[in-house]
Length: 75
Image (cartoon, rainbow, N blue to C red; front, side):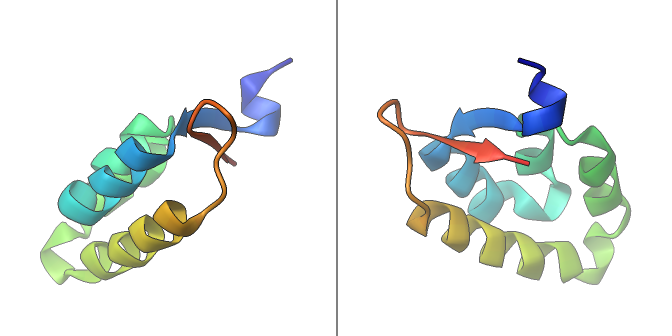
């Protein structure tokens, strides 16, 4: 199974906390295997827009249903 086709499994708690606390610099995107989006977050971090988006993403991920290993699929 190709992870790039179906997404990447990441720990839900780690991804959510990274999004909430370090989301303005895109650290959660790098952790999720989306380096391109992480770079965009860094480039626009001075606008506070990535902070708002990552806060929403972090809350949504923490409310998401995890598998038996505590992981979610990032597409």
